[in-house]
Length: 250
Image 1 (tube, rainbow, N blue to C red):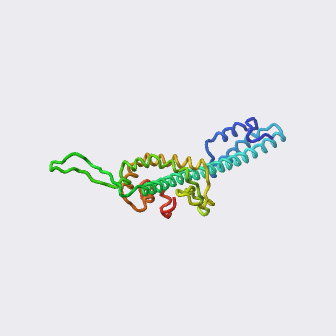
Image 2: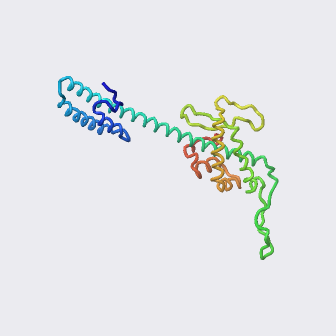
Image 3: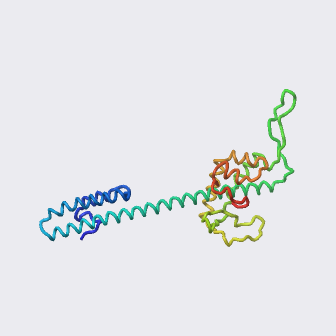
């Protein structure tokens, strides 16, 4: 007896039509289709020239119905797997974006803290007002727009110092520093060092910095608490899934 994937097998026309369906059938349609195929094949079997041919035809018909059901179950399984992979991929992408945003904030805060707080820069217009005054004010150099833009040019290069950590209870991924800034030893037992991870983090960081430059300048132009949550969660939704995370996590 031929295979249900063989177009030359008896009732190949019906089998080919079923194989050409673009998506698996719901169970109700599957049962209705199987009943129709069985009825169609039996009509042909009744016209068989002898008992042997009739027997072979009847067995082939039953085989066809089983093959249709098996193929539909297979397609349902494949589509279910693709859906799972798609969801997993989307979650990993969200984790990367969130981790990159939080790492960007952490690196900018550290860089700002290294600038002498006594240094200031003048901003505003140097034009003389009608009353003889000038609209000039002094602000800390560390939080001036010029300094922040300069820091943002290099901040994403530091993503190479981050590794991936997986939460065993939720399977969610976070990204932590694996290279100390001051040379102190760090616990790397739970962190995964991977060039693919750092490359993805750097790309995500650069995209975030480019698309949210105004928001970053706004938050860092003055001292603000919980910038990670305010920028990465509330303003950009990059960490919408991570609002309950502690502020010292990235």
